[in-house]
Length: 180
Image (cartoon, rainbow, N blue to C red; front, side, top):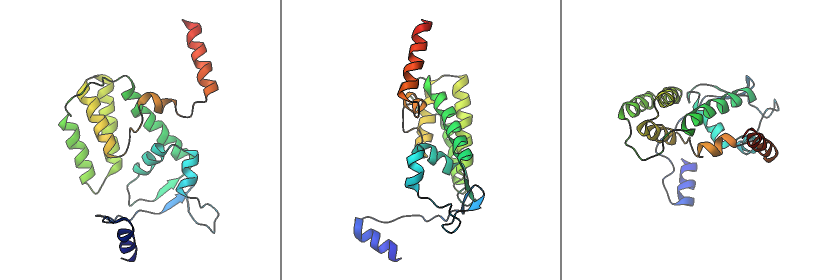
């Protein structure tokens, strides 16, 4: 109650409508602890990893489950998010209505105790449908649902090139030009 009072007084806005207790954070299958020496802050993580990849990693586990932070799990999150972005890369971008069948599936997952892993699986099913059938309604729906989870903050072209050095990018461009 004290934290709520201080925050509301400082910012002049309600603090939160909902409180959620998360499962324990583990680091390489050990409880995160200063005494063990495996403690770090979110600022430390964001210096090394794209915020959207970290967000995807956090969403990939149910909020009440223990979450195992490891470089392998972050790499898996990056690969999964990359697959979603690849589906959007060549997708049609004209304005379109949402496909309500997918929206309802997504909402059902989220209404099931904020089941973000299930909601992410809906995004993957939708991306597979988009890969088969490049129609604007599927593109618009995938962007819409991903944005609800804070995903797709970059254009596919930008995200898919994050982490690629200028030197490597120049080499790739020269190889492309030599093939022409």
